[in-house]
Image (tube, rainbow over all chains, first blue to last red; front, side, top):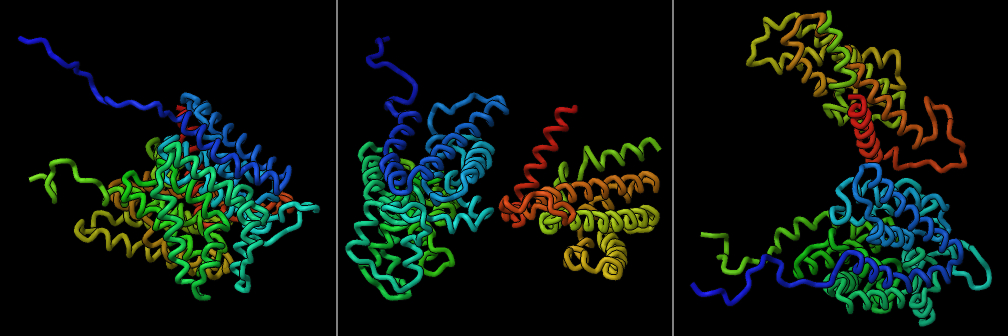
Amino acid sequence: MESPRYTVTSTPHIRSSNSIDKTMRLVLLALSPAAVMGVFFFGVRALLIIVISVASAVLFEAGYQKLTRRPVTVTDGSAIVTGLLLAMILPPALPLWMPIVGAFAAIVLVKQLFGGLGHNFINPALAGRAIIMAAYALPMTTAFIAPRIGVDTITSATPLLLLESGDFYPQASDFVALLIGNVGGSIGETAAIAILAGGIFLLATKVITWHIPVSFIVSAGVMMVFDPGGFSGVLAAYHLLAGGLLLGAFFMATDYPTSPVTPMGKIIFGAGCGVITMVIRLYGGYPEGVGYAILLMNLTVPLIDRYVRPRILGARKGGAK
Amino acid sequence: MMKALVRFKKGILDENPIFSQAIALCPVLAVTTSIVNGIGLGLATLAVLMASSLVVCFIRKWIPPQVRIPCFIVISATFTTVVRLLMEAFFPALNEALGIFIPLIVVNCLILARMESFASRNGPLTVAFDSLGMGLGFTLSLSLIGFVREMMGFGTVFGVVVIPEVIPRNTLMILPPGGFLVLALLIVGFRFIRKRGA
């Protein structure tokens, strides 16, 4: 008998330094510019909503895990990310207790009851927003305020409401406002440049891949061909930068448990999100459709994953013979 | 007698139609937007359940097993018609609110299940207490769901305002998803308390 020339160990053979904590820290870092811009433009009120939302998300997670005698995992930061994302898609003048309702729905109903981190079948933050929307539609649609330049808290139309009104054609100054976030809207969705910077940071650190954001944004742009008012490149660009499209494409559609695994699946998923978003925006009753588009596509993820399953190396088409 | 009382208790607690067996959920989710609706549909179902179970119990020897389900349906349809006409005459507003779900008591699966699995195999006393327990369990569950949804959705109990107007109403509770959420959370609560007690 010869002695073996190689050592035998069990899988996995390739390790990475990735961990949940690290990923969550990177996402928080990537989200912070947009959140800071939101607080800058909408004032203390926006900061309060962010603080309440994050705090209640963390408390609900810890409380539920305590109550069910499971290990408390709030230090992994996932509840903080969910709370922050929820706050960023809420209107800044919302009554301050409503984020607590949303955080309860997001953390307890959607995440923990289905098994905790990695087992939620839809995006918790978006589900939280959808539940507040269904419960308290009036404040959710009217609590948008103008960014403070001089005067504080004037109710203001969001860019998407302007688009919905029909007789609006954006000028260069409108695009500048949209890029830096000097427009009405949810707390963290207005500053396009800050969101893009965060998104590129996530791509650079390989937290997300390009497939979902790119197919989301491209398909939404292509859908502008079906604009009832006729195609206009300027309006298309405005649509892509306005509302929650960028925030959704980079930070919400890419959530791991609720998006497909394979590159092809991700492209189908992103394209579906883009198409549904624009159908809602152009033809639907709501001015914004990103949230519902992502939630709907979340539900199709198991199906997508099933049909784009890669062939096992060596297996024949049509299954093993 | 002892067995009959055990059946009565089981219908309300151990084998509660909604919180334990989770049957007949369609009318439950559809009508429980107020406590009055819940009690109304619950009592109507209780009346049909009790009358048809007793009839099935008395004539069970003569029902051919091959066609027992059509026989059960005819029996429950008879009593549902009686109940519907009575409600139309004496409680027109409630009848309007419950709408199609009163005629649909005919095919309520709680009633069919009790006739099929219990009334056709037991004596009249046990059957009477069993259907009373099941019917009351059903009514209490519906009233509880209706109470929660009415209070959170409209801020009222039996139509009387109990939550000050300044607090916005939670319209989700009136919508179908609210019905599912309240039902699920009440089942959790029910099981939690039962487990504690055991």
